[in-house]
Image (tube, rainbow, N blue to C red; front, top):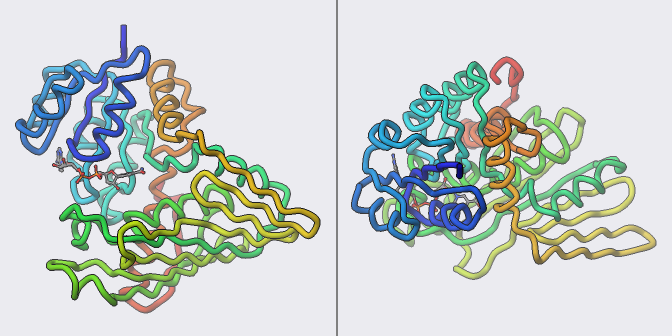
Length: 330
Ligand SMILES: NC(=O)c1ccc[n+]([C@@H]2O[C@H](COP(=O)([O-])OP(=O)(O)OC[C@H]3O[C@@H](n4cnc5c(N)ncnc54)[C@H](O)[C@@H]3O)[C@@H](O)[C@H]2O)c1
């Protein structure tokens, strides 16, 4: 019997996941739930799936083995609660929300029920990140710098603070998550955010358009991450640099460059599709109960969410924020 998967959301990333799922052996895209049934119908016909405008109706009528949640950051909460109540494993796209309160109530329930979850921090599954992680295992990391520089996504929710949480919570979260994955937990953050361009250029922009965040890690490593969304479309930079006792290692999606006194090695991983590995890991867990291939579950992603939301609080208050009591919270 194929696994019956439901997809919530009818936007860009729902389609990206549904396209991948529909090509996988033993998987059936069974139902699509949109914010309106018309939008769901339009998407569902590409996959021969059923369409719904109400989540409760989809969950009542279909016997789903797993659900993909691909909705904007503001739309989380009720969806996850319904899936938890029914014990349905879910894969949710990052970020977990626009704040910490909503994910906090979810993480507690997920833990209580030992529900299988996966969160879309897909870079963790890429060969380039695995190579970087392996390289860092025998280095002493001193400093990390990283950036997410690009243009402003044009979906309307992104430019609103209450819609996306802002760039650091919505996009740079990937880099925060990777720093945690490779260099360990964050102890303290200090952030300076600003508005330079986008408020003047577009209507209804309430998110910051530049930011710089300093993070102290429990290990003593210091990381400095910057982001902006003021660049023209087509110009971007996403990277991390690790400065260690043995040299310098630079990561960008699909590429690792190792610079040491005696050598410079560039390794390019053009064929990688981390989303596919991420999806296979989650569905393997649903099929077998073996969660060992899932590299980011809800509990882990919640820690990343605490850091990114603390950065926003620091930028708003002008004060450093200690990330305390995470153990007690997850
Ligand atoms: N991991 C990645 O690389 C990656 C890439 C792109 C997007 N994403 C994430 O995926 C999420 C969705 O992004 P997108 O680009 O698809 O956005 P989008 O605006 O294209 O689509 C969002 C969809 O969600 C629907 N929606 C909103 N509330 C809903 C609800 N309560 N029930 C059902 N549907 C609802 C909207 O109608 C829309 O169809 C975001 O959190 C984004 O950060 C992740």
